[in-house]
Image (cartoon, rainbow over all chains, first blue to last red; front, side, top):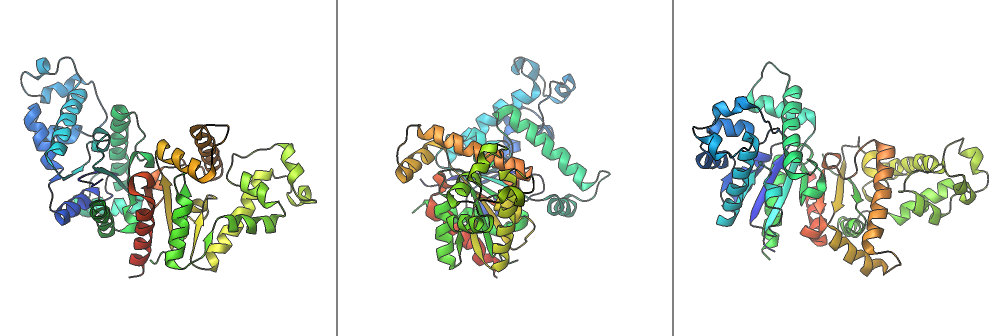
Length: 203
Length: 203
């Protein structure tokens, strides 16, 4: 079956977003990442910055998080935690985006949310610590924390969030159609492999 | 760096061996699977059938297994269990094969044994239960056990063996450069992707 929807899940710093953008450009289809965040924000009333920071993180029941929620949300949220409320909106937005037509969706557990779509190709990108550390320093600059600590922290949050909402193990190959070591294979080749699979699926 | 050695680890019935053979044929390089078993047998003095059955299985300290060992082995084995003894020979044979030149090696934890070779491409193949069940019945025929039970049993043995000797989690994407869902992508496309990566690495 023709693969029209490409989801990319990624270890922080492995280049999954860059690959997603390249694939979307090559195939001439929409790319959803920050754009997706914005759309979720519009639907939820949350600030985009808040969603960006919490959408892929460990679920929390912290009351403090309500302080960032838009007015009236405690009622709309119907007793759900901020994270659960965001998850529901995230699912609904991602299902809608996929229904609209071919696209690339990066992050946000889209592989799980779209697991039943036969026209979806689910990709996971990873790389070793040194490749990713060098990459995040180049991309996001230095910070007080070591690059390794930043990677571990971000990976842990994504892993916990994924496990909590999907019941699956983050990075387990069986969850994806294709897993790529971007450090070993290179960003461009990874994008080419994905495009090749999509092209092949049309035949 | 040019990828010369391709290791393929696979869920039972996912077609990893078939893919390995196709890749070896396309690239015109040796393919080691049963041939590898024979070579290990020659070095160890064990019967090929015994090695085939125990080489990827859960380690055991069963005294019964010594009954199948060649004469004089208890001395040569130097107090090691049959599985540990086989593991040592397996490592040595695989390291030697890789030193001899380009090749495809299927199974036998070769991804771990050759993890430090930069000219190696490590591939893992998996597929869902129904794809694999249909495949093993076609390939190996029916048996008293259901195909699902046979798959679970074989997977479990490989998983336990892998974890025991490598300390890694079987099927965790980070252990491999490339993981492929053969049911979703198809056997031929998987072989093409691997050959494409090897060709690309020569440029």
